[in-house]
Amino acid sequence: MVDDVDRLVEFLKQLDQLISFFFEVFLEVIPRYLQPSLRNVRQPYENRSNALKAELERRSPEQMQFLEDHGLTGVELDVKLAGFEGAFNEFQASRDDKEGMRWLPWLKRALDWAEIILGSLGVFPPLAALAGALNELRGVVKNAIEAAERPTSPLLLPAIFPESEPTH
Picture (cartoon, rainbow, N blue to C red):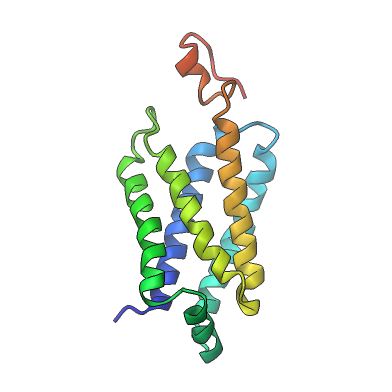
């Protein structure tokens, strides 16, 4: 039977997929000043995500009580995961549309829902550093996406001026 910890670990795996997509597909269209730093942060992100999953899977009694006290079990977790998973599933369904980028708003929505869950995990001292660092990177990724959406970005220039070449 899948318990709430399993569901949280699955959430983290799905968040990993979103972040990986960002690194594999979207990184080249963000502003150049962000590209080197973001390239270098991928491995630390993966390490922290794996460590957080392992820490959650320990299922200590104090951890289980914390999860319950902070709305990360039962129906309270259901609503948070429903929002995240809805956006994640819409993202998955639209991610092959590289040209029209129908996936972009769903990626951003999923990152917003992830903030709620990571924020709750970040209050528990044994998880705080890991969850906090993942939440900060989630915010960095979202801000980088929004920076790429500015009118002069290589992401939007071809749509505004079809004859223009993307610049990096």
